[in-house]
Amino acid sequence: MKKIFLIPLVIISLHPFINSQNKKVYYAEIDGEIDLGMAPYVSRVVKEANEQNMDAIIFKINTFGGRVDAATQIKDAILSSHILTIAFINNRAISAGALIALSCNKIAMVSGSSIGAATVVGQTGEKLGEKYQSYMRSEMRSTAERNGRRTDIAQGMVDERIVVEGLDDSTTLITLTTEEALKYGIADTSVNDLVEVLAAFNLKGAQIISVHSNWAEDVVKFLNNPIVSTILIMIGFFGLMAEIKTPGWGVAGTTALIALALFFGSSYILQLASIVEILLFIAGIILIAVEIFVIPGFGVTGISGIILIIASLFLALTGGMEFFDYDIIGTAIIQLAVALTGAFVLILLLAKFLPKSTLFNRLVLAEEETAEKGFVSYPSEKELIGTEGVALTDLRPAGSAEINNTRYDVVADWQYIERGKKVKVMRVEGIKVVVREVT
Image (cartoon, rainbow, N blue to C red):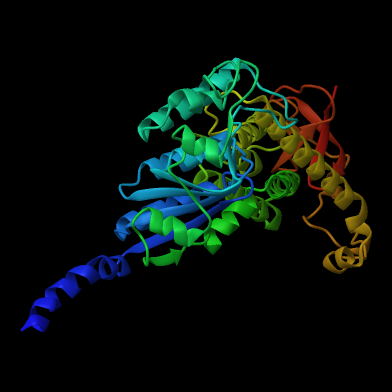
């Protein structure tokens, strides 16, 4: 009888263990430089975890920071989660990494780690102006406020002028050790490994599902690399310039469109290019196509098309900025300059060496086909030389004339000839009949 009463007690005692065994946790790493290629990965992790009703998402963070626009995208994705998010800081969460860590509901730090130093700096390491710092202060303040953390400390990580009593003065930025983060309420617990993170937040024994970037995210990140994107733009410029110089549409134009489509596609995914930049690019392509197929020569239409394409590329390289960033703009200008220069060099090299190559000689006729050998593209009217006729239209200089009771398209030699005037054929150049007024 006593054994029967013990069964419920055993079940009750095992309930927390059984319950934790049914929990599932997503585990993702935010490691290295924070760039725009990382944002789609984190957004997907958050979306999938919420759709599958995971019990929590743990982000293992170890970074010195990176792009502010990428960090804000990641922060927005994490804040949109309706399940528990945990920042597991292993070593450091500096600069943009501090903003990402503050966006999580809970923060666990390994002993000896650090968080802070979030002032905005340029590519050379110099501190940027007040406009940049003001933006970053507001991001840090609002994020800390969202998760119930001290806003003065969050702002002090950006601006050394903010003083936190007992922590810093007006000359230093705030960067907290693990112990200091616990003392001032920025971190929730100190841990040694992932097992202790789970235990600290009632997730002990939960199933860990590691999530890594997929091939599509890796491809987008690769295409967004400054070197790769510059090469894509260069191929695009080279193909378009080669297409303008050749009749019709061929391999060069198609290759250019593929390269530029890859560039704009990756930029659109990373929220650098919007539909506006893509429409500008398409408008530029249309104008160039009109110049190639409809309007002879190359003029205002083609130049306008090139300007629209360059403008769309520039906006795609600098898009997504929350504020005016000279570093990003400078990098974009350098990329465009390198791409244009590279395209011109390729065009010059092809023009110089391609006609001398073995492959080119196999594609074209080596023997010249001249009229003296009997090769003509159009019947010549050499027999008309010296004959006379009457201008049927005004020759300005081109028009029509009746010669030997036959109507011919003719060109005045150098002067304007009125309709009805008597003309004489001076020479025949291919299919062009050159006449002069008989006086």
